[in-house]
Length: 171
Image 1 (cartoon, rainbow, N blue to C red):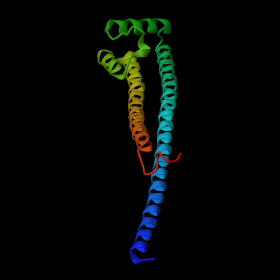
Image 2: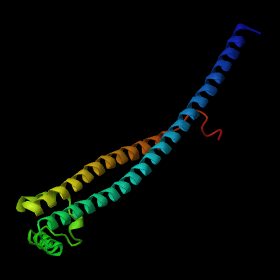
Image 3: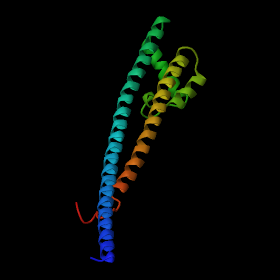
Image 4: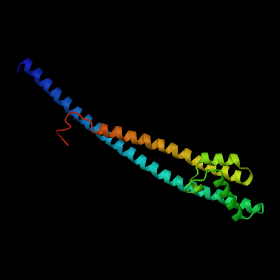
């Protein structure tokens, strides 16, 4: 065998080995990107569950504020039905009443309500504004996490589908 043919064989073996390694590395990178995309999908599902749980917590907190309002109105000798009626009228009178009722107020509307009310009603409005504000802040943060995870999922999906040496030759 001549030196030229030995060199050609060595080069061919080297190229073949490099191609096999490139294929393995490409396939591993695609598989890893697919796994990362799956994790990003799971993270989005976790965020959805966390928001639903936080909504339930917010409703419980609002009920607690309403119970405190009822207790305070009783402690000052007011009839709870009358204070409820007064509260409803005050909410409607401010122009802040939504079609679905006061349960759909956001923190901004509650803060506006507290600017016109003092005492028992103002205190109620402040507490409701805090409950709504805390909820809105947490949900905004969670929605940011969900958006980031969705963008990562898309990027990882694209990466997992990218071409690598020998991709179309084997499965």
